Structures are given as C-alpha cells and as structure tokens.
Length: 210
Image 1 (spheres, rainbow, N blue to C red):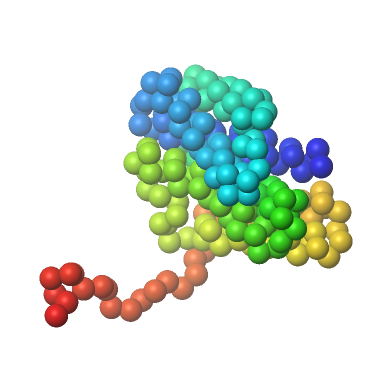
Image 2: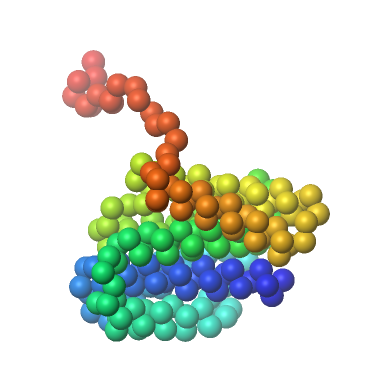
C-alpha cells in the first residue's frame, strides 16, 4: 500500500510543478504560484475523494500542502532557467497523468471494489487538475488539443483495474499501467498521435434553426 501511495505524492508534486510553471508563464506573484500549484496538484484528487465519500486526502494529511508549497517555491526561483517552460509543462503533465490515473483507479477499487468506478476515478484524478490549471491560467487546454490526452489516462486506469482483478500484485500492476499511460501520452506529445474526430457539418446558429 505504501508503495502505491508514492504515486499519489508523485502525482501531486508533478502536477503542482505544472501549475507553478503556468504561473511563471503568466508572470504571477508568489501567491499566484502557490495557488496554481495547489489547484493543479490537489484538484483532481479532491473531487475524487468527495465523489467517493472518502476523507479529502490533503485535509487528513497536511504533507500534501507542504509538497505543493515547496514545489511552487522551487519553481518560482528556478523557472527562468528553463528554455521552454510550456514544453516542460507538457512532459511533466504526462508524468502526473500517468501516476494519477493509476492511483485514482487504485483508490476507486479500494473504496468501492468496482472496476467501472475505479476507471472513472482514475480519469478524473488524472485530468481535472490539468484542466483547472489551463482554465485559470488561460493556457491552451490540454483537453482540447488534437493529440491523445484523456485516452492515455483511460488506458492506464483500465490496465491497472484489469491487472489488479487478474491477481497481479498491486505494485506490479501499477508500474505496468503507469508505463502504458505514459507511453501513450508521450507518443502523442512527440508524434502527434490522435484518434479520429467528429467530422460532420458544424452546428447551426440558434437564429438559423427554423
């Protein structure tokens, strides 16, 4: 269990770094860094715990607040050394997504024992923080990019759930699922992998509808 929980800390720290990087791109003050790091690092997990009816993780364990604050301060003093902060944001987001989709699925299984619920929790945990970050910071939303994003989180959550139900030790299942999710998202970033999109005629304006 402790080894799986490491993914939670990793997901929080990496997503917090992406939030702080977004703050650096917008040239915010230190409070802006702390806020965006906290929202990004803990947003998805907070919604997950509220839906599951579980104690909100950072309320029970204040170490998560310290992790977000520490990461925000570190990025505040070092972000200027990075040549392409948006590129780094995307790659760190990929790591956070892979870690959090597995941890969210694990927690969903622990609390409910339901694989479908676990998959949804993995998806929500992995994607909501990044969506909130982009919305607040005014960055191009990762959700609206053409390359694969949510699909990578789904692949990780589904893989972990199947492997766990099949009897693979939790840590081994987590590592395999993490690798699958990260490989898919990394391929999307590097090679522009995408899935077919809706190509029908655009919707009409309300005034054009008879």
